[in-house]
Image 1 (spheres, helix red, strand yellow):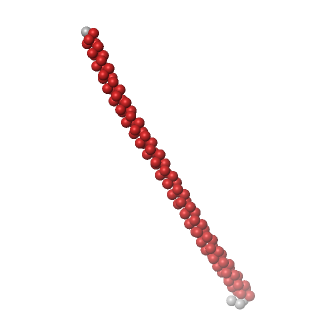
Image 2 (tube, rainbow, N blue to C red; image 1 turned 135 degrees about the horizontal axis):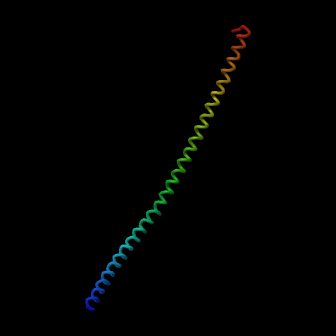
Image 3 (cartoon, rainbow, N blue to C red; image 1 turned 90 degrees about the horizontal axis):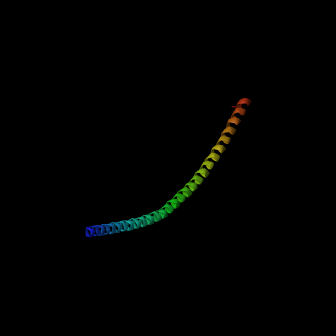
Length: 103
């Protein structure tokens, strides 16, 4: 009976060692996957930097375009204002001539 208990204990030890070896292998696999994932995440940060740079470029181009449109609008506004002043003078002259009876 002592031999049977001893062999059962030895069999359990062998099984335990096998389970520990499987656990070690699985842990190593998980560590390797984690390292790969960490590398992927770190490399994606570079892509994020590229995206930020592209955003800055778009914003810069938008500011330049906005500046051009503002200048164009100011120019058109000045033209309209000058035209309005000219029209106002013409209307004033016409009213003065009507009042004088020189229409």
